[in-house]
Amino acid sequence: MLGFGDKALELYRMINPIEHARTKDASNKYKVEPYVISADIYGANNLAGRGGWTWYTGSSSWYYKAGIEYILGLKIEKGYMKIQPCIPKEWKEYEIKYKWKNTLYNIKVENNNKNTEVSKVFLDNVEVENNIKLEDKNTVHNIKVIM
Image (cartoon, rainbow, N blue to C red):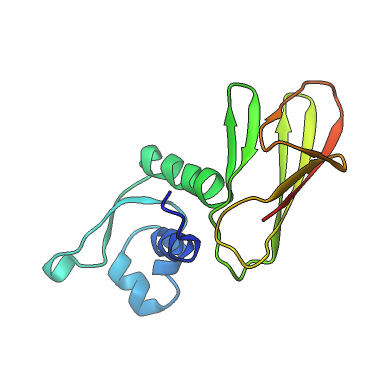
């Protein structure tokens, strides 16, 4: 939310449970499933690095929301879509396929060495505002976002 895309991805990866199971020692310290989000990772004394409260859906839904909305920048509100990425500068591009009712949106974000700030948005090759009204017309739209 502060616009630090490089730090955002670093922290996002730090929370990812698979990152705590890359080695046998790390897995033995973490002690919980490496495929579900923990609500807690202990930080004190002999429990430091151990996960807790797995299968807690609140944590997984916030993790999902952070990745989709706050890093990739896909924001849907009141029938409108905005793309507001906060990504690492080194990411050159990424793509999202988003289905709204019966309409598919193919979104391609091209990055010019930035963390944030969208300069142009194109909907089906026509430049538009970064606030696209979603429609239910059983069609496919292509969105290109240039940072």
